[in-house]
Length: 166
Image 1 (spheres, rainbow, N blue to C red):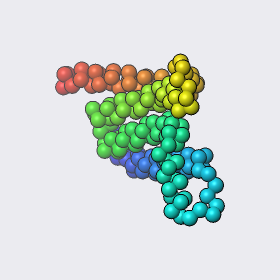
Image 2: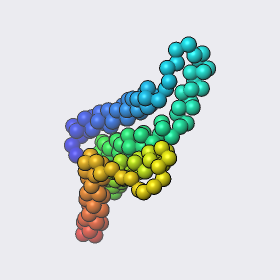
Image 3: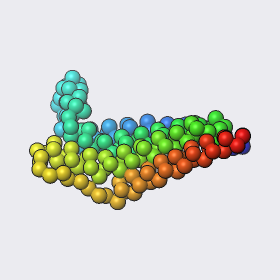
């Protein structure tokens, strides 16, 4: 990688971190606005207690599982940018970063198709059967994660093979 690209990649790493922070704030805001009752006339202590009670409930966390998994994938992307910015475009740490991204995307797919529907049903008291949801986006993201893992595994093998010649 040329030195002229490093500032751009460093900027992408910083931007990724900023996006993660903003998405966490947005996620908490969305979940709280969906679940908090009207707080007009409540004291500050009562509002805080209500907010904490909401954050400790399953209704707060179950719908947040997939977005949290996506945040993990974004963290892996930030790690890839940091490794690229370090100037080692094809080392083992970069391959591990791609593999981590693949794993995170597989978690997104599994969480969206199986984990969230099952937990939502159980939280509602429906213990019969195993509900799942084959949403296109979750299946596609999971398969992209599988592909990234396969590519990273092949890259690791290729790198090891090339090092034998050196």
